[in-house]
Length: 110
Image (cartoon, rainbow, N blue to C red; front, top):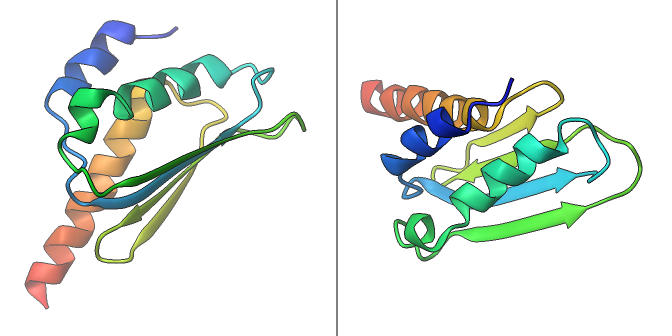
């Protein structure tokens, strides 16, 4: 079940300021391609890109039947690769936020 309303609500308070590079790779015929496309459209929206004008975004569309992948490189050079085979659009944001907060907190402890 897709939760578009929840995704839009989560996206409203999200900022891309700690992300250096965001890449998406997906097959448009994959069963979960709609969720990945919705995530991509949301984070590359004009309002979202204003939160970090220096972010590098890249979408790679393939037709090899592979699972969707979202690769996020943070400003502190940490990298997160998410396999989107069974994830909804909002789950991508939640995972990116959790990963970013965890590494931000680790940097403060050092």
